[in-house]
Image (cartoon, rainbow, N blue to C red; front, side):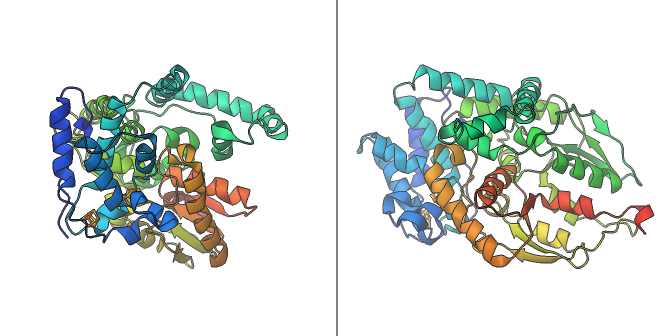
Length: 435
Ligand code: SF4
Ligand code: SF4
């Protein structure tokens, strides 16, 4: 397979390049597509619709048409592009090395520039949301308010009165796990064993407030294995939300902030616990001061490459555990085998891969909110597969997938625990007093 040639991803919609140059760079990237159709059976939206315009090949043809001026930028054309999950299953199987992820992000940015401005309320909501996730103090404040909403009975009242039954608000409410109190991180966590090296921990935005348990588990395992873990306070959101929604300029600013935060330390690797963030960080451009100065590693991948000391042992787990492979871990980072080998350290565990694991679950960043019909159809297939498997625990390495699948399981009345592989590993870790 030919390796994908990365486009200047974070520049694809950047106003510092002339529009014609950006369009021609995008068109050149689409030229690599020989229209063979080998990607079609792998595309989740084509799988659901059997419509060529909902396939990678069809979308590339639409992008070529609209950027070259042969097609008009109609709402129907934009809807076909918006339905794309950005899962990049097509890119992973393309024999011509078409950089589909770059193309769809670039096309969205190009079309966003050409359409009339969105209503004011929508622009304000976008600015507010992206502003909150990029600023940890505001993020923690928002998390505290949401926690109050959950614990004061307001959430229950909103659900009883049907206020959150429909619409984006309802979908957000359904996704929300019980939130822990947000708590600031120390700038570094000392090694708890023979020193092995220094790593940075990337917190993310949603993970830090909705999945602190996984971050704590990652920090615990890393320090027990001898790593000093740096947690730079100046780090921010990875920029994935902006990049995939036609705002590469803000994504680039966030990349530069992360670069400055992590480059201040000499690190062996930067560790992520959410593969969505990991995939974005790993593709930061080398130019513009956005490179991170150390390789990005998914936590399972790093832990899997280490020699583990004898004294770190795990309690047996007599349960069937299903593993979901997030698209970003499978098709972008291509590290989806790591959680399986890592979890094999737990005695008696019965590990299974969720059927059709290479197909997206429908979470896909903000897709679960913006394209609920498609997102729920894809999720329903996962829930049915999970039910048929008889698994008692579902593991996933991406927070977006975890929230989406957990909400689906709740709606289906199924009590299956959803967690990160590393959180399960830390839970099974035996202390000296257990032996
Ligand atoms: S994107 Fe790749 S696999 Fe799909 S039609 Fe084009 S060349 Fe073929
Ligand atoms: S990124 Fe995923 S949804 Fe989009 S065209 Fe490719 S396979 Fe289909």
